[in-house]
Image 1 (cartoon, one colour):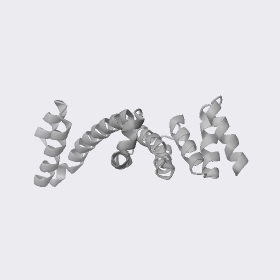
Image 2: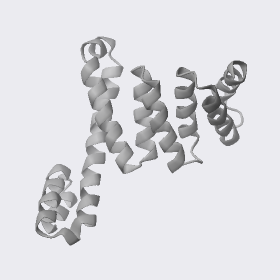
Image 3: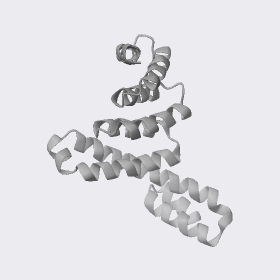
Length: 168
C-alpha cells in the first residue's frame, strides 16, 4: 500500500491504483484505503475521458465518425460517476448523454445527482432538461420547481416549468 500512496503523491494515479489492487491481494484489511486510491484514479480517468468527449462534441465531423465510441466512453464515465456518487461528474455525464440523444440515461444520472446534492441548482437543471427531452412531465415539474426555488429568476427554469404544466 505504501507504493500505491507514493505513486499517488507523485500524481501517477494509474500506477497507484494498480499497486493498491495488488496490495489488497496480500492484505485484505487494507481494502478501504486501497479502494479510496482506486476511486481517485478512476475519477481522474473519467475527468480525462469527459474532456475528450467535450472536444469531440464541439467538432460535428468527429461526432459523426465516433458516435459509437462516444456512447461507449460516456457509459464508462457514467459507471464511474455512479460508483463515486459524485454529483458534479453525474451532471456532466448527464449533459453529454443529452447531447447524444439519450435522455433516459441522462435523467437517471441527474436523479442520482439530485439525491447527492439536493441544494445544487445544476442537478435540478440537468434533471429538468432530461425529463423535458423524455416527455416525463411530472418529473419535469418537480425538477423545474426545485430549480426555481434555488434560482428564482432563472428564465430557462421558468420556460421548462410552463412547458411541464402545459403538457401535464
